[in-house]
Length: 93
Image 1 (cartoon, helix red, strand yellow):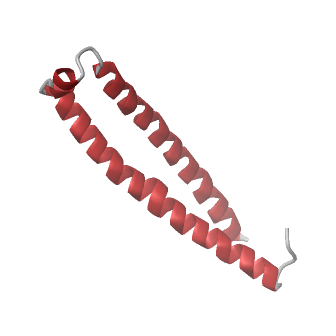
Image 2 (cartoon, helix red, strand yellow; image 1 turned 90 degrees about the horizontal axis):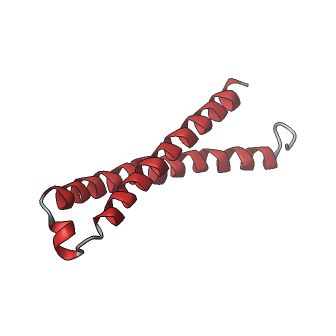
């Protein structure tokens, strides 16, 4: 780690701030926006039979996408809590 009150330490801090902002912008807000659309469209296609109509016998692919999206979304939330803990630790110093 860089020594305190040096230009390099300030640069590192600014990079950390931009990382947190970009992470929450893309990985939380962006992910949530895309996931809501995916789940809305996917569940609608499964419910009204569109998925089976266009790809007979392949509806499991859509279900797999929805499950993987849920798992990866959980991972995004886990990472966000880890980032928030690290940010609280840095800001608490």
